[in-house]
Length: 146
Image 1 (cartoon, helix red, strand yellow):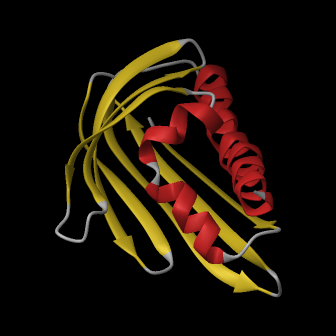
Image 2 (spheres, rainbow, N blue to C red; image 1 turned 120 degrees about the vertical axis):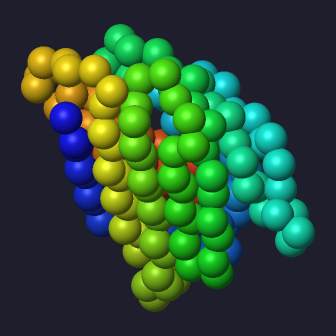
Image 3 (cartoon, helix red, strand yellow; image 1 turned 180 degrees about the horizontal axis):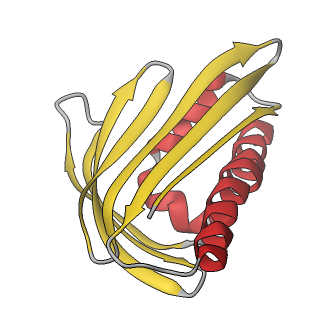
């Protein structure tokens, strides 16, 4: 079952701080509740994370995933390389300056390997969107205040 989620939100911090948080893959478990582990497996020539291993628990389901990241000045994109529970995953954070802060658009598309009740799938989808908005906002604004 394919699931898509999208949310737009603003944070009170400049785009550079948002990108700093997104690039700090190993801090994911600190601000993203579903992420239990995050490890950079390889980096690009410019030092940005390339291949990443994460352990995620959402709606009672745990999954170990290998993700491939692509970076631009205003976006963070990842695609699933390998996982136990998912057959596909594509996520994007797009960052746009907005006054003194930043506008963020988050999209996440996943395809499950197994059939699950719609209620569980929707709960996991809501958790992903809430984490993107609340967790990222809190971490970005905390770092901007430091």
